[in-house]
Amino acid sequence: MIPITVTVARPDLWENLSLFYPGASLSLPATSTEIQDAMDRARITDNQPYKLIDIRDVNGFEMSPLPINPPLDLLNILAHKLGGLDESEQIQFLAMCKMEAEPPSMLRLINMTENLKDIITVPARDYAELGRFYLDNDMVDGLSGLSEELYQSLDPDKIGRMKHKEENGMFIGTGNFKYYAINYATEFREIYTESNLPKLPQEDAGCIFKFTVENKEAGVNTVIKLPAKLENIIDLLDEINMVDISDCEIKSAKCLVPGLSRRIYKPYEIYDLNSLAINCQIL
Image 1 (tube, rainbow, N blue to C red):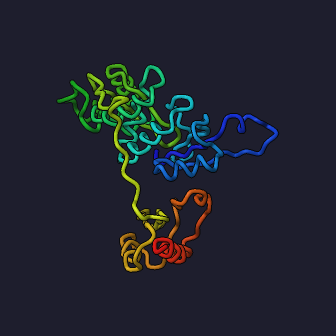
Image 2: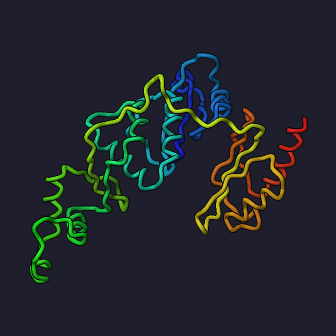
Image 3: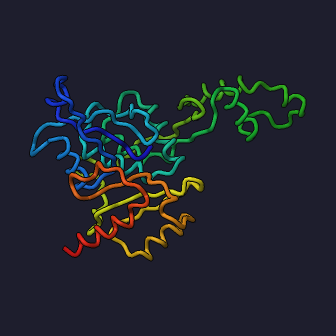
């Protein structure tokens, strides 16, 4: 579910069909420098109004639980909070969003990330798979003492429908990504308020380029911040079992100098960019 990608645009330019105006793409969570860079690219200055368009998660799916045109600062905080969730917690978060009676506010979405412990998820695509899960894990009352023959004659689909009715659970997801979720919470904890929002990490002092590089075969990645010592870059590559930077795949690349972040970098350029970053640091 992370990162969140969004297009920042000036409404007057975006709605003028005679202009070619793409706005500015932005990946969240982002630093204040990266946000300012996006505003510059979108030609938004001072207190000019802006709109957020085409908000999507890392898989390219539209972020449907979000309010229309949410404030960018709150969306950035949400992206940061989602970034701290593991895969199972992300599924719990999605389940909690689907269980909302009405579209949640940004503040409620941020607070949801602190209310996931009472959300239980089961990998099940339909009633039959749900019933089989309960049967295989001895989670159906009144079945102790049944013979193997009678046990095998039980209908998982009917068991699943019974449990679904008892628990008021919900199936979530699409395609092969499907789960059954139950919310056992008795109260919703309001951890954050408008005056008590979570603090975002401070920007990396002296960092000019920031790359997330991946060993695609092993499915592991690391972050390289430039400028850096050559031996530190080698150590980071060693962490993901890579010897040559050119064999890596760049998952994300950011230049923290406003106006330059649109460039798409290649892995073999990282050492040259490191020299550039070192020279910039000297200047």
